[in-house]
Image (cartoon, rainbow, N blue to C red; front, side, top):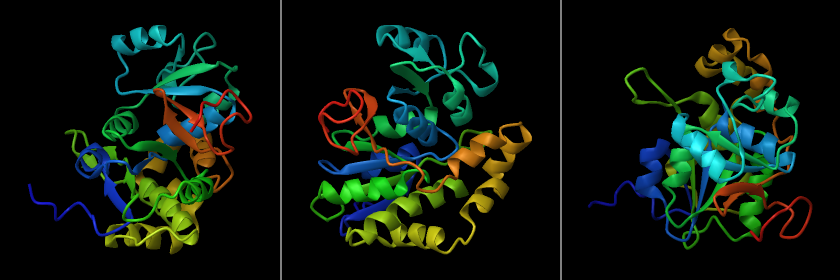
Length: 263
């Protein structure tokens, strides 16, 4: 197979969706999944509270069985949340929900991208923790041609199931790339350079996300708070890394804070 699309000459790479992740996932490198509205934002909110977050690709009966296997609560759809099941993909709902040590968070896009990483380290990135993720990647030695970083913007789906590139994820990916580049990561591929330029050149990131297609969808459905939380730029210092099947905070190093495994 031709490798013209692999961006192999660059230490920081950028692509879209689960297919991009499967095609470009670097062996021994690091994959950063960015799904601003709302999977990776929700992951940051939950992990800040000390929750182990298990990604899962389907919201069906198999998710119920998976949550039972993990002795975890199962997040439901935004409108399906109840006092008995208050955990959902809504970051605002997760902030209000009572503490649970383990949570299964179904997300076809974010979970599919994490699953496509193969042997790579997987990190959940967003606008909320872009700076922390960039610094952590640099400390771990990621971002060179020998230890590449692949930043994957999740995007959304059109009604026919095809990928819809989403502005909020482009901005979130650009924020992570900009933070890593500021720490000396690189060289950046042209794709990564363009994503960084989109973020750096957007004067009002929060306003752009609120006014873009995905933001409008949530606002008109009554989830304005979710958009507001998703655009809390660099408000979070957690670095959720997929370890043992769950996202946990590796920002402070092993043995510090909540029940963190070695990262």
